[in-house]
Image (cartoon, rainbow, N blue to C red; front, side):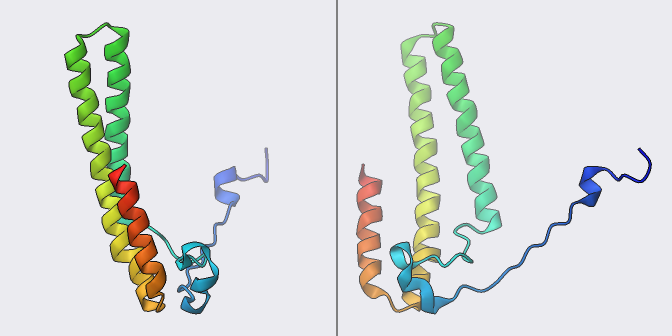
Length: 127
């Protein structure tokens, strides 16, 4: 068609980045998010996504092993590897949470919420 551009060329994307407003943190869930904060910075996010994709492949492999009637001990060995992979993902998330999200609460002076949050994360990790 004459006069028409491909869809990709006609779409403009505008991204606005703003600093978190620490004064509004107390009015949000857990007191840490005001709409501008990112929970995971790009390098950490990419590392997590990579690990999750590896785990996704392991899960597919497990399904394939079950479909092919693989020896049970071999399947159990692979399920252990998947659990360890998920545990490593949890560890990275926990490290990020303690170093980023809780740090924002410290900056906002929300010491009471910090204790609650640490206990909540500890209990989740123990499950």
